[in-house]
Length: 472
Ligand SMILES: Cc1cc2nc3c(=O)[nH]c(=O)nc-3n(C[C@H](O)[C@H](O)[C@H](O)COP(=O)(O)OP(=O)(O)OC[C@H]3O[C@@H](n4cnc5c(N)ncnc54)[C@H](O)[C@@H]3O)c2cc1C
Image 1 (tube, rainbow, N blue to C red):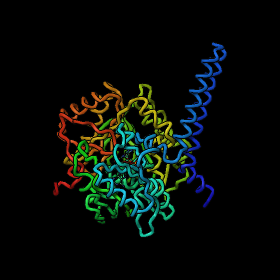
Image 2 (cartoon, rainbow, N blue to C red):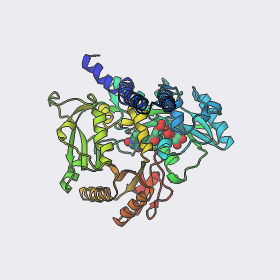
Image 3 (cartoon, rainbow, N blue to C red):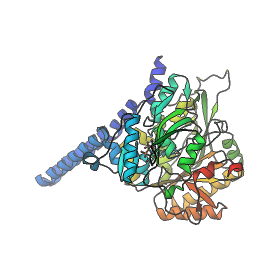
Image 4 (cartoon, protein in one colour):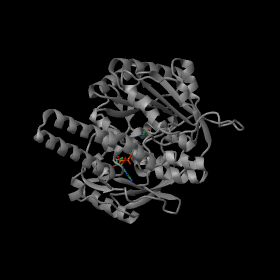
């Protein structure tokens, strides 16, 4: 590996994220808390206050250490299963046959819940109740072209990169497992030239257990969509019948791309954004709207004139600008040229990485600030620049009235509208606004916050939303 190759890998690595997290979160926290102790000791000269504050601070730091470093514990906290998991009957299968037996037994018990990295429970603000079967320890390549379902997107991405291959796109949360990516029908940021076939087009095949019958089948992406997407998300059964056991990945060459960004102010901007080749994502927040696209670098073009992504703190800066600050009144984008640059396809996807990947302490702010992150899928007959521009205007108007922030992606004829708001009531207001704008139905993302009713929109299922028009 060359030196630049080493650094390139380092910026992506979990070690780097953990270091950043430790620096960003632990030390400032420790400094603030112990300064407070010192200040109280100085001002109050009260032994009781100092002792109480010290106990509080130490508990906080121990909690941080357990939560952050403790094996399995942070996942259990996210799933609302800690400390019950320590005393309860949680199971952590390590082989496919152990996973199958655990799931069949739990299903027969009437309360099977499969848990992986537990981000969906965190976003849904709900506990994983029932007989929990964790896939965290069933990971890695199985040697027959399949990957164990608990393997994280990160791990698979790195293995693919070593072979010059990549996922065409993957969700911002790359610390999700391949099994839950399928089960929650999560998506990346597809461009005009991404493989067709919807959010699961990256799956060549998957072994799926029917926990009711104990039968294992090898399914295509369409069959997976039928199994995991044909119930409306707000009505998913609690006793999960289908379990993804292993996945074969449909990879693509890890080509070199260039990133472009534009303020989205006109139909022409929307047209430019829709032409984005390999990745497309659009953010609406306090700075207005920003469209990002990653296009292939033409043959012979030099790639030394701009920086390569991810560069130090690049994805953190990206997240802070388009995600965190976007929801505040003082979000500014500044000089857009800092978003320019090159990356391999896997690096381009990772450059959109959410900072929660940097560590649970950052992710926790979403909960502390009581943010609801939900996502709607709206099927339309044709995605046109005019439609995108209209939707941007609707979301900008909504943002200026009610705050929050939005992400927009397009996959075929489906608009994926990611919403972060601090009020459930305002979510309902947004559904009303979309209805008034002519949208009649929508599907919900099963891996995010689930709203009980989309009224006045009608909730439909993901299978129908993503099915090609002829098969609806
Ligand atoms: C910061 C952040 C960014 C995100 N960005 C995106 C994005 O860009 N695009 C997007 O679409 N989503 C996104 N998501 C949502 C995320 O992809 C889903 O919540 C995903 O399911 C989380 O994966 P996990 O491994 O933590 O799954 P978990 O929360 O553990 O499980 C998710 C669901 O899948 C089930 N499940 C898990 N493993 C299996 C299995 N092997 N077989 C059957 N069922 C199983 C669980 O029961 C649960 O219902 C984001 C989430 C976060 C927190």
